[in-house]
Image (cartoon, rainbow, N blue to C red; front, side, top):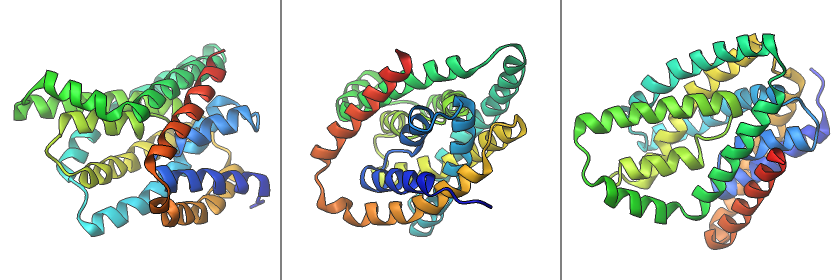
Length: 257
């Protein structure tokens, strides 16, 4: 398989930022592929989903080994996201037969990125306000709300490859304030594996996955994530979060306008 160095370099840069900030690669990789490299939005989304499933599988193994995955939360999320992903892929198939979905995907991606930027900057304020508003959630209601969150993430991720990171984590912090953050992070990453794998496979069936691009990105992202993770503790989150949020907001607005 042919390796494209420029795409591998993009993988290194995105992997570095993911390692530094913990934000999902889709928030960075998909708009980069669309705006900088000129890929069709559907191809960018489909390729990024399979790229994410591979990288997050490694993260899930690590979190599972360390015992920082709440499989009950993962199962609830998957109960909503798996059927939602299947329905969304089928809808994309029929919509693609009638018209070019590029503009629609770009618009939804733009909105999702702007919301992700807001969630990144104001996460704790949002969590604090909504946690007080929701109060103590009963067990049955909590389960159904988690399934509903899975449905929303399934739709968003299948269309844009974005949403499971900043938006998903913010929602989990609201629903499960008593769980340690590392268990929520591990659960969010573990849930992203079947979600992105299923979505990526669906896009592959639709013909919107570029194999050369996928391999080149993975080749660069693995060392990037390792380096980013190693130096993350040396850089203040107060510096990284506003910069990352500004980038997400600007890219989201660029896709919209």
